[in-house]
Length: 222
Length: 222
DNA sequence: CGTTGCGTTGATCTCTATCAAAAAAGGTGG
DNA sequence: CCACCTTTTTTGATAGAGATCAACGCAACG
Image 1 (cartoon, rainbow over the protein chains, first blue to last red):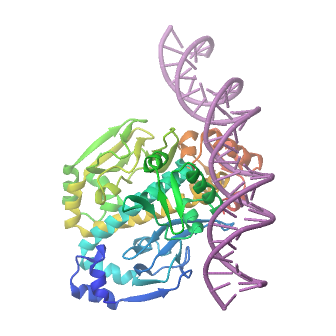
Image 2 (cartoon, rainbow over the protein chains, first blue to last red; image 1 turned 90 degrees about the vertical axis):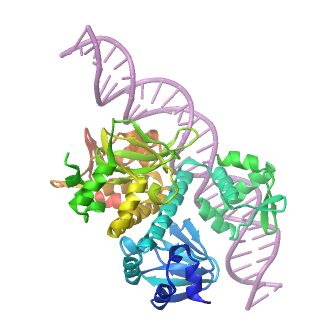
């Protein structure tokens, strides 16, 4: 892969010159992880953050009895563990590869130095942080104020795409993970999907869900 | 109040010169709200953010049937609605005064201009954002993976102080609000406090809670 | 083919919300 | 200081959402 070329396409770095991109590349390391591998652990000491080059990772918390809540899923171009740059130097959650994934590891100190000379990058980081904050506010609202049927409806709406005349949702993860994204367990997800199928709101096909009644789905999601 | 003096004590502004502080003051307005008054609404258009000068406000979401989840409570020196500076220009939640409160309203555009000339402020903002992100991650973890007894235990531990030989927790808000902080309702909070009282973990006194068994409380909070 | 992991289904149980009402605490004005 | 009214908090009874536990079907895979 042409790394500088790739980096220049990432929102956070798009204002940098090719010399600066080169600089990032030399101070960064590529980390390759296979599907299912742990990238870092909750509370682990952190001296770097990551950018996803390819693949996807999930960031999640575990309860004492092994339940999982996924905080978010990051793909190509996304920052991972960026909270470890400016706040205390520990990772805020577990991070595991959902697929074979390539990450660029960027050292905290190098990056801060880069920022000092390129303050305009900070605006981009601030923008990314703001989006992340809003995403978390939505998640909190969902977990606290909506039931699972409503959360699932919201998720399907947010992740569906038009394909021809149909509205379909490709999950791109197994149902155990989808359950953990929604803050529930696979059994409950399975039953809730059944509810929606019985009400003819969605139809499940081998590799995707088809949304039969978007209006109803919107109403459920409120 | 001597505003520039006050501002210079706020973390975000502590590196500014008195001329710059003066500049902020002239471009900012003081907003006074009485206890119970709404400062702004969820999704309302936002062209400014706020700094709390005195008093406290709560930021919260409401469900369709009127349930409330408090996202956080901000006091003297804290930023409010800072996500509206860099991301889309709407307020991310409702904001209501818990007490008579003075806020400084800082226009988004003026502030951005200030940042351009004082990039070091951005580090402070980034730091504040990082802390907020971690706080939200904790809240998500709590709501999703801990039951109410555990959330209450965690809250009490986090907010208690040593007074003489005793560990006490002064709530500084009514129980309806505490319930909304914990993601529950007053009835359930009342019952959960009873549980802890019956187990001799805490004792309730007219104006505060005394923690009788911190070890047990820690164990409950995990 | 056995094994292993994933997804579904069924039965059950537990936590927490809801609804209703009583009790306690806080003003307010005479 | 007391009677009155409002708001907050507590208590009780009930219902419901979702977790847990156990079992089974099913596909992938060595």
